[in-house]
Image (tube, rainbow, N blue to C red; front, side, top):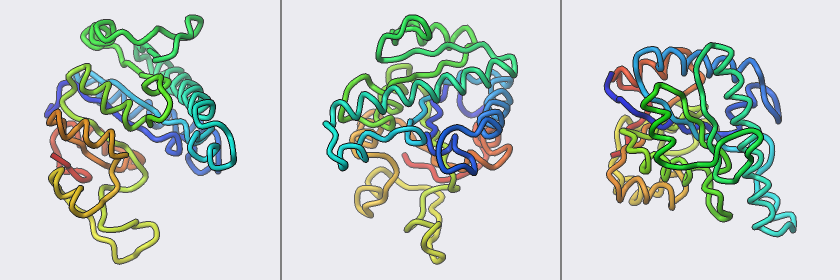
Length: 234
């Protein structure tokens, strides 16, 4: 395996599957199988999931809601998604732990860095919920921060597109995909990979990012095995 410890970032929208909102159980089950295949190869896996399929704080703010209140609601949405994925992972017989930045003793453990690392060392899949626990920060930032804290080898951003393009490939048929970019290339070209806080954290800590299509069966395993999948930023 090319990587020993990874952080997988999934968007909340990815869990919708073909639905317009909410959670598609079949899509979550597919992700669980993909994660199990990678875990079976001895890779330590941590996961951060967004909450945009249920609630997006930034959108609520535009409608007049207090931003801090809206962001906390978004954090709770990420916990719902995390619980759904945890259930799917346990159905394929993976041992999991859900750690959140907001205390919810009845359903998860509080995030403690040493505890998270120990869970990974014991072969458990660790899911980080509730973002960073602070408003004004996205789950992209949470993914970058947690990856740095647990000394992950790479951040794998699983999306519905197969990498970073010159423009949105869903809207522009002439868009071309990059195979590899430097952090400076992203700045210079003004490309959207993660929010700038998350991206800068990775840059300053020399943590590579790979953007890839998580929905294509087998992609996740091939990527961890070292095949050129998606777009590498380093």
